[in-house]
Amino acid sequence: MVGLSTDAHKSFSPIALVNGNQVLATKVLIYPNPAVSGNTNIVFTNTDAKQILITDMSGRLVRSFSNYTGNSIQLSGLGSGVYVAKIINEKKNEMITEKITAK
Image 1 (cartoon, one colour):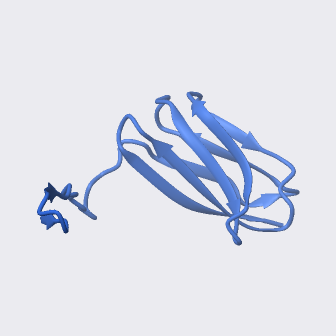
Image 2 (cartoon, rainbow, N blue to C red):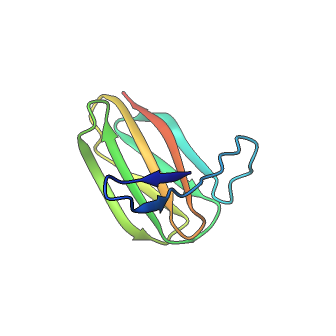
């Protein structure tokens, strides 16, 4: 797509392909879910560096991990509620979003 500014400057917009049938290289297992006593585990299929963001349903950041290279992580002390886990693998250009429920 070509954009034209008021001073006649052309710019090209990047094109992104979205394919819902693509198999992700990073897979995630969250157990137990719902979390028992606020404790749960997130297991990954690879050890690529990932950014992990845990937010509550209002979008408030509860936990974050940068450049995490392990194949699993244990979350503890989550209060009762519903959380969103975003796992971002920049090397593979992937983002996975999962829901975590804590009792």
